Length: 255
Image (tube, rainbow, N blue to C red; front, side):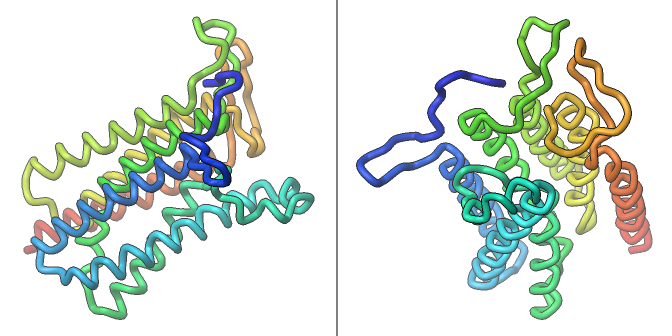
């Protein structure tokens, strides 16, 4: 979705400027922490431990997301090194953030001897809500634009809206699976990763005007293009998710 002259700021008062991008991130962090704290304490986790873990994950998530985005757009940032740390202007790779959060949380839980799988499940609502909100913020930053499409009533695919709907769908899926029974630790998390990988690869990535290379097919009439780097990584991630879900279910049946 492209809207001319849209402002990336919620408001500006002198030197104080609040961007939609930062606001959506703040809301998603608040939602994620509230859910993690509330349900984590119900499962017996210490409040201080939850807070420390949350801070570690947020920092590593931001670092990982920015690092991957910069590396995949290195030719631009090598000429503009002063913009590398300007995350307030957008430019965070979800896969990088997910990887950074996973590694840091796993290491922390291993050191503290905590059940990482349970905490990973509790992180899903915050991550899904965050993805939906940040994609809305992308509209105000005029990034994650969709491909132009001649055959539709819109000029280009509203890729940001597609992404936001993916986040909402994953949140609804999580709520459905969580209420269906008592899934084994790890089931909700890997179901989320599987659902995200499928929807991102099939929908958002296909209709998005992608800065990453496209090898194969581009149809300017329908506004589709593949394969991108994300497309190529989608099948192995799906296989990994299916394997982990099988492992989780096997552990449940063995108990």
